[in-house]
Image 1 (cartoon, helix red, strand yellow):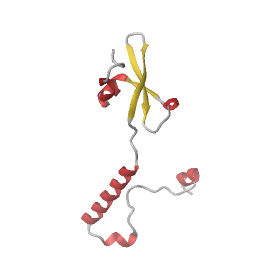
Image 2 (tube, helix red, strand yellow):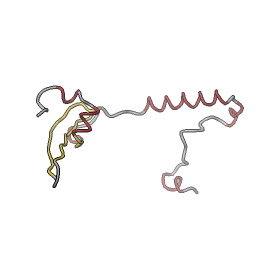
Image 3 (cartoon, rainbow, N blue to C red):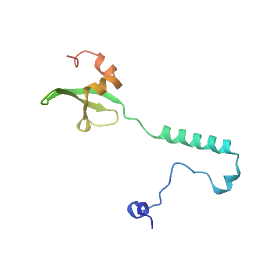
Image 4 (cartoon, helix red, strand yellow):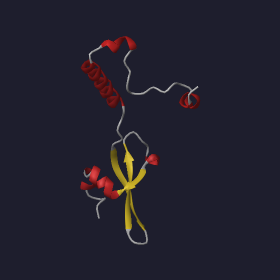
Length: 105
């Protein structure tokens, strides 16, 4: 029994090679196209966390610098599940959260 199967109770299934053995006679380009279509379906099913609101801001003072963090409320999560993220990274990725007044210094 493989380690993965022993740990999780099922065989490891790679995202590649989802075609049936009988389909192995397909032309290579068709096979690549099939794999790309399946990858698109997987991407559509996965969800991306989208930040909704900045709840709080804090600055941690280290020896040589100050590190600003913001508490971010993510879509489909409760306030209790909000996470602290680096303010600089959040400003780069989601500038629209900082454009409205109230949270900026």
